[in-house]
Length: 224
Image (cartoon, rainbow, N blue to C red; front, side, top):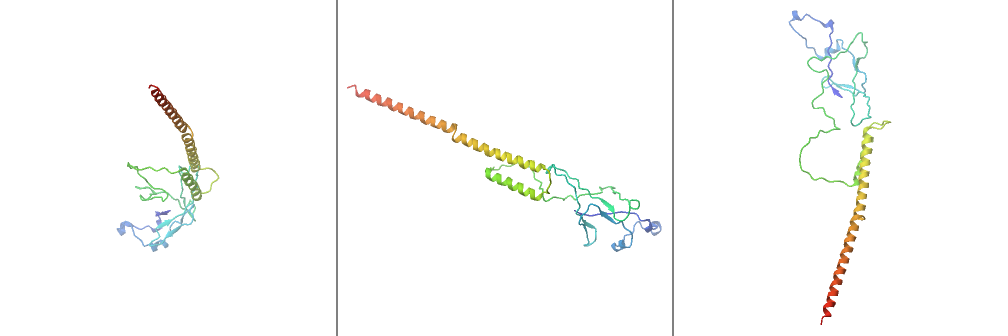
């Protein structure tokens, strides 16, 4: 996490008479910070962190630990704390308090985005739908399972993503069984039976017509 960390404190040893000097504040150079006392703040749950020194050390990059519970992943909500304390002074000497004022103590940037998620709208349009075969769908689901397992932390319990993938496999397998059943009953069931029945009925009717025509022809020949 990249952030700007600001601290305000009061050191009465640096007090001066603003009325006599007719100034409300004194702006000091950054080098003066090395000569005065400042709180030795550090992040308790922070990992490898460093302060940017170009051009001034006013930006931090913090890698903090965050305990997560992934039972409801990917529909979960995580709370990642960032604990701040003094490294060498006890609570009786240094006390940290959030300074709210007119703005929030911690403000996130408006353009903050995550690379794993994309925001999509809901436009209305006409499109041509394509339906993939069952084999391609099974391969896609297998790739999804393997890829998700590689990116997620290893846990000893099932997550919501595992349940979702299992349901997807079930529906894909059920669609394959449905396709096989419909194909069987369509090709070898009632359709062919009706076709054979219609063929047999047409054959019988043709034989009857031919018999009638033959009988009529013989009766005509017997008239003279």
